[in-house]
Image (cartoon, rainbow, N blue to C red; front, side, top):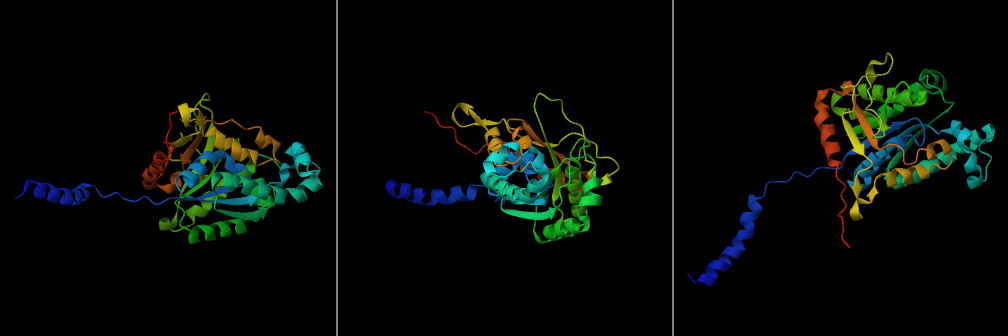
Length: 304
């Protein structure tokens, strides 16, 4: 056979053999996440995690917000000029802040890539450490539970994130997390998302220990230390000059009515996640796979 003909035939069939030799790549579907929080701006605690899931990986992030944060009128001094409203007057602040804070949250959500918002419009009474002040006095707890269970039943959420119900946390934060844990536990096992509790920490701080809150059995984690984390200080872009604190600051900047929240800019190097015991051990690898996928920035470094 003519040598040139043999070479031509080999060139035609080689791609077919190459294709057959390649291992099948399983397509990983983007994850679907629900975040349960007490106030607009609580999502700032895990802003970079949400950004990476939604904007970098094309996942779906929804927010379930129990109150409108009207008790934040005390921190609205600088926002009075910005909005042209006397927000630090309690009556005015409580009447005007619900709409303002919802808009601020949606502006922050555009930074993060949030898809849906579910507002419960419960009363934001005051700052205190007692979770029962919200659960037993201010909120229609049964209605919140029913709404959350219905939402979880009709959407296939892979993960649910809430704030870690640490003893030092705002009572409303703890109440929201306890309600989230109870709602997940009430679902059939096959419909339960993995639920994780999150807090931020600076790298210079000692590692946090959390073994559960008070006598709430549902708040107990599988380990006392956080199993997963997202590092806001991971560098990328030209000479690694940029990190994810830029995103955290952009997001916080949208909550203009909340001076105390604005003061947390640049704080928090790590977003750390505790895995609750009620998930069972079988969900640990699922969570580990998610956080492994979030480790590396997807941006190509360019040279100039």
